[in-house]
Length: 476
Length: 113
Image 1: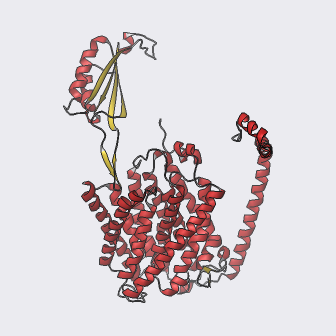
Image 2: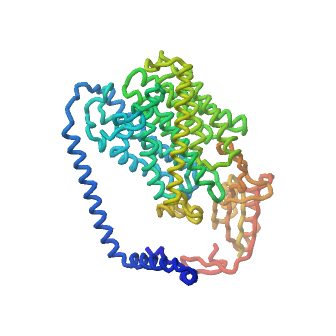
Image 3: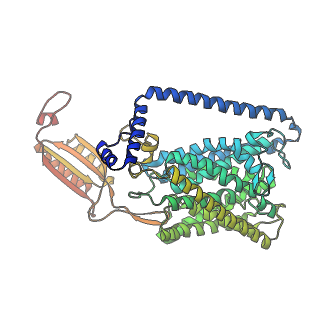
């Protein structure tokens, strides 16, 4: 409390000159008095919180009541093997977000690690609630003109244990599986604005971005939207998750500008390596789980994912070796993530040998992007969210068009030529939509709430200024 | 009473401590520090960006001795820390005004013991 004190002399000097400042003084004084009388203020706050809780409770109850009325027992058409695998996969995909948190957290400076971990964890909380209330229905509700899902699943109305149409897993499970993808996508963007974003604005951004950018795009490609109708292939989210997050990351890096202060090296590479390991592990759920069944395609996706990642990790290490005479640990984990990103859209459609090539290509392209292009243009994409996820995602989406094979997955409708054109169109539209929508959203938030912390806060570090905590103590 | 501070290469610390122990010098404080001299820092590469670190890791040893132990202490540190390479470090010797043992309140040379 009491942070509102204003240097009296400056203030009254201005007031003497301009009448409008008199009004400002009055407002600030009133605010100060309110803060001084903390108890009265608290009572009002408590009452508001109680009303809010009651309101949320009522909404939940009403939504639940509507849902229960429609639930029917159809456990007969549910396949227990498929359900078990997708359940496990959902858990694996959720684990990727804390994995990402450590991957990013180890790479920032000591004073900011908690802020990154906190943003990832908060994304898990916020997006879950947004997804079950509105996000899911916007993405997977009944199609409206190919652009957005209808409101038929608002607050999960009508989603129960009945099988998902065309599959043998419960609809509720599909919703939960998709939720984990919705969570990690905004968390990926954190890499671009790490070390300088205001926490409050981050929360608002994550909620709005999830609704305005993620849900529509998920609808276009997976939920029956126009790209789905074209036959665009995105097995596990190369377009929806990675290009999308990568373009938003570029927009964020451009709007926020460079960090200030000396940019020290990663403060804890072992944490980053632990995080990358968790990502690789979780990615099996992400990719192999996306067939929504424990079948041959799922196994094929599993193997492709693994092979591409190994190839990409090795390729980056070799690039480092050739250019800097040493293979670096940060290089090999960055390469592995680039491989995981690139194989994501392709994993259920390509052979292991194609996967190897996709992984190899991804590391080459991302290495060039991060080493040369970023240095040339000078934007501060702190942890290369665009350089790895955006660029790797674009390569993966296009490579899917080149390597998708009917022999691996009968769902591939087109020959490689027309398929490549479809992939190209889908990729370009995603790039343009995601960049512009994210840019506008970030700009609006910048004007209203402010995106960036003050210079002083940035120098002190986000852990202390945004969360009043420190990750490491000096003594004991 | 003298205060000896030595900045040495981190990997020579064990030798120096051994030699000090042999010369009956027990009062030692060690800290991990960063510093630089003429040889500059190590170059590191992070995601393809070459960075020349401006500081190197060093170890700082602080010893308080009575006058007759100054020479043995300097010998021990020099012998233990010398590699002949650039960056072996420095030994600084200064006089101190007073030394007090907290437990007993003893002062002067007796407090060092």
